[in-house]
Length: 139
Image 1 (tube, rainbow, N blue to C red):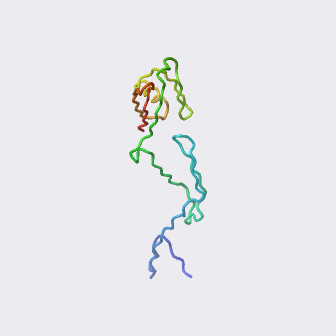
Image 2 (cartoon, rainbow, N blue to C red):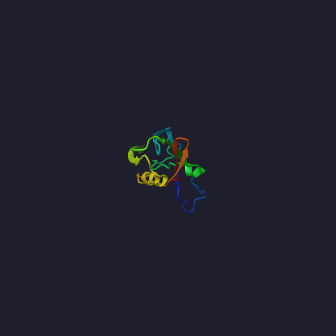
Image 3 (tube, helix red, strand yellow):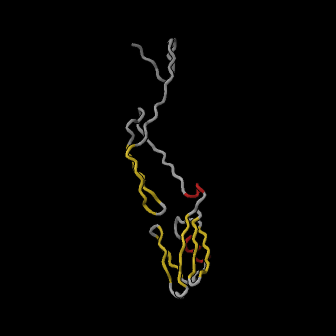
């Protein structure tokens, strides 16, 4: 038997060694669960074949709706007969209180004051006896 280096050729050896990397297999038992409207939980187990070395990190990739050119849109309908008071919007365990007679700009500002909400655009229109707030989450 002769020993050969896996990284460099041994001086005077008639053989040439070209090591080939072996990639680990995919992780097993992968699962995905919705944690909140803006977050996910990803779980997995180690791959069956680690490729000969310990797996020290994983790359988790995701695409949000902005990658596809679509944004999240919500509509809020408020009866015009309701003229006084406030309502509360709760998102990601955060709340903001909004006066019933808020303008689109005021609602937009209150939503954007919430942490991690990002850029929001709000339009307010009147339909018969209902005020309609069109809310679009841009980021």
